[in-house]
Image 1 (cartoon, rainbow, N blue to C red):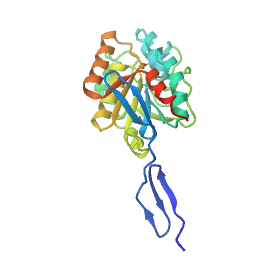
Image 2 (spheres, rainbow, N blue to C red):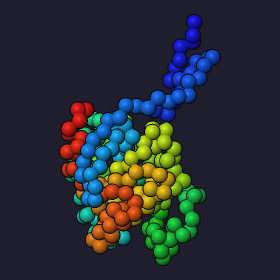
Image 3 (tube, rainbow, N blue to C red):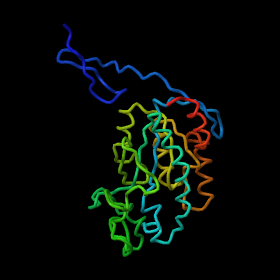
Image 4 (cartoon, helix red, strand yellow):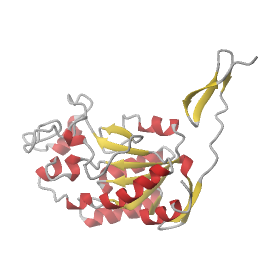
Length: 259
């Protein structure tokens, strides 16, 4: 009698194995496609191959007691994605589209952070920079597992959501993000978060270079930079790196498909 085969791995990147057999065929999941309009084209995507990356919607960038506000940046625009994300994310979860929270969370000892990277956050050397305590609450700036690196309270995290700590503007640099997405069989990525022209754009560009299909959700993305930086980001994504769409258009496609 043949031995019972057991799943080993994460579907769809899973083997079926027993003591005497190994099935390496990795049968694909049946497509679950939706259609919606982007800025430049009508899109069809497969939800079984799609994931949503929410980047840097964390206290240090979006909270009035965080690091960005401490250095005098007007962070009001950083809250713009909250309402559309709170409409979109529950629907994506109902369709089992993974939500990945990609937040800046350094090692406390900063052993993997170069002087060039540290200079961006403490250009004088005597300010409040990476891993230094914030004057308001003592949280270490952009440090893993701290209040500073936590997602803001206005955005609830689902029990099945995935958290990724990043250490540069790109969420792919020196992190497990690429490995996780490939294990999950994801090839189409939805992008949201802050800042559009910095960490969101850097992560999206790297995703494009790695062969992912990239869709920037423009109403779920914002920046504390001048508006021309946001407009340049939208232009460059449409021109070079993928597609730009609204969450409303994406929701219209999702709502036509039963969860």
